[in-house]
Length: 241
Image (cartoon, rainbow, N blue to C red; front, side):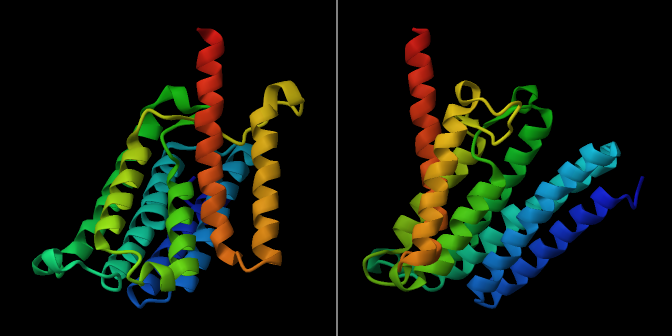
């Protein structure tokens, strides 16, 4: 069904991504972050509503991927594009300074690749292989919105930004196994890693609300997710050996 409720939510996600991109190009990073967060909310509920109303369709799947490319690929790329114009550029790199911002759109390309891979990968029904695009987008959007003064200071520069961006692109399409927050039951034995992650995430977010940490808590939650998933995966492989 072309205009089903889940598809309407997906289009809302797409509109949020467009607004985030526009805000980013105007340097309104906090507004861009808000739109990416709202897009992620719509992205969560479009799938949930499709399963609830039993109205899943091929067009809904394709539309969802297209919306995600904009909200979680193009929008954070636009924020990084603007950030390249603000960060310090070493003297030896000055001749390339006008062109560096355009490298930000590598992230949009790798996000699209990650989404295409997800659509075709049967292994990702209950977990993830590679960093999910919403997590990557939230990491960059919250980091830029929260730490812009530090990112624009001499303690950071365009070389570090480019290297960190490449690392994120690699994680998007890597074979790194990551757990998903999908509960088949509520037992501790089956959801130990998920419960530990949620407890740590709540503590970090509370610290962000109650201390000067602020929005920096969000990228820390994403790093906590990655670190815990890698640690849990290492323990699992060790026990199998």
